[in-house]
Length: 433
Image: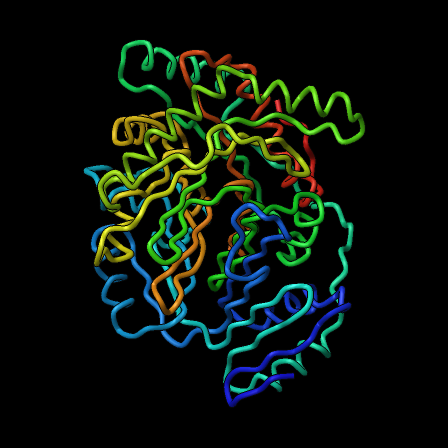
């Protein structure tokens, strides 16, 4: 053990239950953010796991002057900050609006300086807080949370019937044919009312679908249970890096040959490649607004990565950040992420508002951290369960990129495939038509 008044390091080698103990400890806080890389090497976080809990100070705002409030908050002092950017911040960046219902009710922006910060991997845990030894002892004394397989007490309903969804995709393809846009990410909500134990659901989801940008996030009565495979944006020193996902195929773990065929199909899919390259071009354009001239490059195009539920096509784009560019200016240039909008951004966001039925809220937003040096890492909130504990409202959203080549029935099946892990984590009725 290495120790100071506010910072201690502890050896945890061989302690396989430590992650569950940390999560169990986090439950006592009304606000916390747990980020888990699940040992993926896809440009990992600054630590395998991060827990920020308790609130020293915070900023909360809805679209309007939210980013200027965040800018002032960041400039108050140098510290770790954790929180989220919700999709409807778009209304602050463009002349847009959001009138659909929102059953979860996360604010458009929230960041907090934590009372304690825990960073750990399989060997070492570092605790920063008022009394690190007392925190360590409390964690060590926690029971290991076990997953209790109790089916949910409600069915999940859908905003679109299958036929209605297919009809909507056909209308979106007409917009593409007219030249209104090139690609649009269209999402639909699956919802219900049921009382859950968010930690149990997170543990179940993490067991079914461990992904490199997973998050378990609580802000009072609002909960995010997230198994995201996608990074929105990372700053590390002078480098900005984005890793957009476009292209998905189903894993077949029970059949090695079929699984390989699914991966190969994705790798060679012209439809998925066209989607991916359009998003890459959009990200390059976004990064060029805040990076040095001619520094933006595509580090990897059409990379195929395998996760427990799906194969994904992921590209990596990076650039050298221009001097004296604050966090909020980077966000203005790049948010919302192109993988969750399409191109051109403003037009497709207008179409999203026209054709979707639910406000996205924190879904297709971003969760992550800013460190004391100004480096940051933010995910894309997808493959997630949102929960409002005050109303017992559950929301799951799923979508896909629509292009001229899209087949509506296949897009529906892609949404159903993306739902599987979340439905399994909730253990509810899966009969969607």
